Length: 97
Length: 481
Image (cartoon, rainbow over all chains, first blue to last red):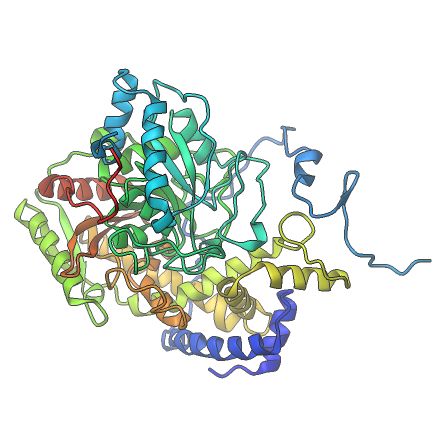
């Protein structure tokens, strides 16, 4: 299945992946080849078949709603590329007043 | 230290340590020497671990040197996932399987190489280097748990843990001539395994014999409150029940696993193994798994979709690589991810995002989930007629480094016999069953019913009992003393 450049560009944006024009071209071609193979699934009649999301024979598991130790703030921040006090730092997202 | 120690079973090493014949520290020293002598060529390790205090000297794995695929979280050394994005990541918690190994007395020697985020079949997608196949250094060890399989084959470790999302334990085990077992989904806690495809991922052992795989599964398996998908019932005693007479056991041979694309020498070795089991009283029956030609297509929608969602967490904010470039918050995400992820991971994120995008989700993701159910039903039907299903693990023996690197689809097709077990959640074992004329190992795959890990292990054990322990060793430099 052919997939156009703009579609690859849009998907990359949705996936929050910056791609160069050369990469867009490469992925456009490779994705097309992979999707050609995946087109096989259209040969099958799946009418009325329940989707299978998970192979485990498990119902939703419940537990008591009791407090228990979790990750400490210090541990949670221990790999942060940039932090101030107990906060993760991101670029400014609002204009200064 | 004798070469014998490097190829001794985990059962024997643990017994020798428990009875004081040898100390855990002596065992660790011998294996570290072996790693030092061979890993320059083999490149199985990303990080060596500091050897901790003498571990539990009475445990079932007392002093057994084990290595971990580097997508299993440890506190003492980084967990890189073979990715630049996690190059310096130090997990603030430890995977349940690692905690259980340590409690059983195992010595963790280090973290092994893998395809980035476990996406690949050769370790060529590692951001750091490609691991070599110990039987032929110009060939891949398989993947994604290629470092673990190569290390066990080369006598650098007695046993290893890997993870298997579409064959990533079984295929490298086959290509390196060792045993690899993917348990039933849920048998082993995934807590602390870096997520790839959460409905498919399962941790399992890589060892040199099936009884050792049973021993490791015994230690790492069982319910875990930290993983709500772990099965609630305690696992049976695999090791004590592993020896079984296979007379009357019904083995199904799916014709779809012996068709076009299967290398003739791989077919010959697998058929010899099956005939041997037949001569010991098992019956061989043809079965049909008609959905097999659709398994790869189904897998390569389901797994990348789950991956694109799981890998959204790498944002350059909470942990992992962050770009130096300035820009908006969206730019920060997009650049950090572009700089941190390698080509295959990016490709799968794009494929998964495509399959999940609102105008395509029905045609791709939901359709694949429906086919997934049909694949699971294929197995249910077959397992009404037979006790296990057997065939090749991989369509070919180890391929040359670089041979498939430029064509992602050709690499995906390596998984043709393994992905279905993950889609259906059933157990699968790869057992070495001989060599090709180019001296490359071949793996026999045994698949079983969900929850019936024991029968799968028993059949593998029956085969290795007949053939005896593998005496052939990879042509690597012998230990110095």
